[in-house]
Length: 177
Image (cartoon, rainbow, N blue to C red; front, side):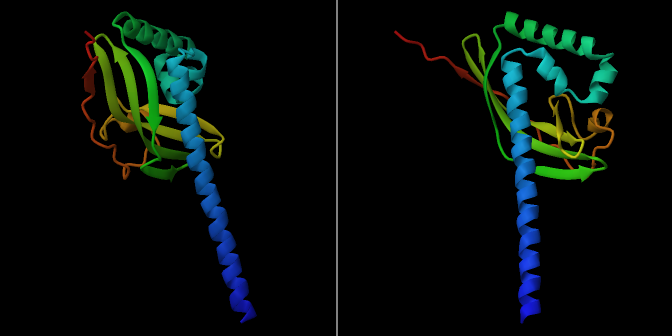
């Protein structure tokens, strides 16, 4: 009986610690998403660069080119009256360890002010954990699909499928008379 109780106790401890580990990873993923989108809203290019996956930085020709591209994208959006106002992320829908990285697909809803109203976009980001999940990167999936995601993330686990993209929703400003 004592051996049985000891075995149960050990199993319960293992379960508890593995649950805490998963909960910590989920917390870290959500924090990374929050920091990333806050940096986008504040046009904090250095922070955005820090969240840019190293392979993307390399393919772009280095950190200076990434920052120039981010500035150009934000300037173009600003000229068109497109301003990111808020975001919400939900718990990941897929999570896997692939090599030394954790890959997680996270649903995100953004609200952007545009001329005449707002645009609500439901999309997904890939949150990548490296260095034993002490370093996090964000990969936006706007131009990615299952056929080209491995060009950005060479260690991508092809059993993970990116969700279908949804069309943005435009909500017109209400006219006051």
